[in-house]
Image (cartoon, rainbow over all chains, first blue to last red; front, side, top):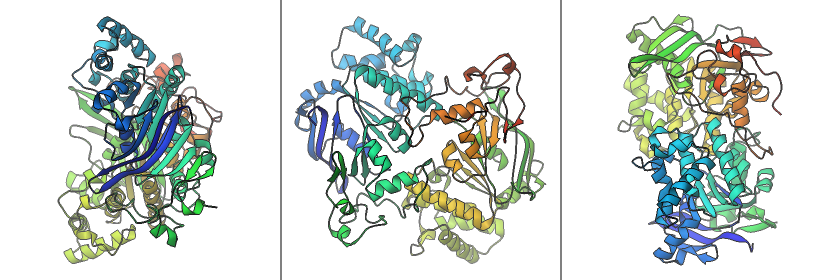
Length: 308
Length: 325
């Protein structure tokens, strides 16, 4: 893709003996929503943090707006950060409770020396309106707001530096369904208005299907399948993706649920990481890790069975 | 529904809690009955009173709570029992499964110790017989026999295994009713599917009656016979879960269905319910959903009764007839 805003290749992270993320690669175009789905321990949140270099990668290239973030100096990285922001699952934990909403939203602008203080205050007003919060919210504190409102505050803060990419890690998982819908709609509206690209991390397959253009499915630190959302949801090619979709509520269950637990990332199976739970594993899966291969123009699957 | 005598019969259950010096209602006039082998779901968002209902039924309401109404387990009134008798009847007759097994299982007692304590207390088994029974139960919920789990501790188990231990404990004293409060919410989807399958099998095998608490109507639709939708302490709709999903009659149920993305649909935006769930103690008069309801009018200032509408029961002056598009 020539118009890629973000192009990640060979991204890996090990914490001592634990290989949390291995050889992850994907691209995100401008204004596109790319989803990463996976269960706990799949490495999806670590991947999100690696992309922003909040966690230092062990290996890999993170090409963002044409330069490799992985090799940028701290100072250059800090400057580049204004173009990428993050929203977390728990807006209570990620908003400093001692700061007013105005201070919280203005802080990223101060960090990046955007405007003077009068301009920043004016901009806070604009941002509050954009995320659907009253002007009066400005002088209040995070604890005075509900979970959904706090997530709106986090979104306003993320928008303050006019980023091109927002990484959202389970942004609605802690919210009740009626509030979830409000926040998802808001993200879509803002994305459309500002041409934002979204890296959307979630375990909720329904939400991912609704939000994303393309997705990557992760299992134990690797991407097992990646492609157009519609294609993968209609015809999953990796046995894990198939099992995951089969298990999701609201979808007709086709097979028996997967057996067993997700293995520990400290003690990975040899060969294919999924083979210990795969209903279709055979000899080759034990000693050879499948490489991602294209099964359609923009659809890649890491499975020996996807070869022909 | 069957004609058998219900296992659980709840009539006009109300619960109030002391909040900043006054009694605040958290559940109002809830009634339901569950027949043998039947699974009934309580569905709603946080703060709607579903967990409080469960706690009232098992006789463990929060300190200071006032519970009124009738709760009968196999015909026996529980609310008038002494605490000691209640523990005895409830301990054997009702099993429960909580959302987070990590916090409801004891961290420093072995699995065997926790399981045998309850077996010895409730069934008067000897230590040895209790350990045998515990082993049998663990095998029954699909835990590997080759691992000696009786000597294991909670932290050594995965989330799915912990929930299986919870289920084994819940059915250990041959209860007639199992109450499961969001038992799969904290689990990964592939593990969630395993646990749901186990619960369904248990229900069929032992003819358990089940009260299943969930925020997710689609999960419930997979295996519950009836769903009760709650909003702000009120039962607003009761019917089959499929009916609630496909032709919701209460505007709140409709709102819930429209707010979630559904598999394979093409909508450019979701339809959220405007506003938010009112906090405890500030519920509106009359119909509690009216400030957020698109069908609200003057009539809604009076609280509607639960009335039969099509195949469901609905608490609304202006119930919806049509299908979800």
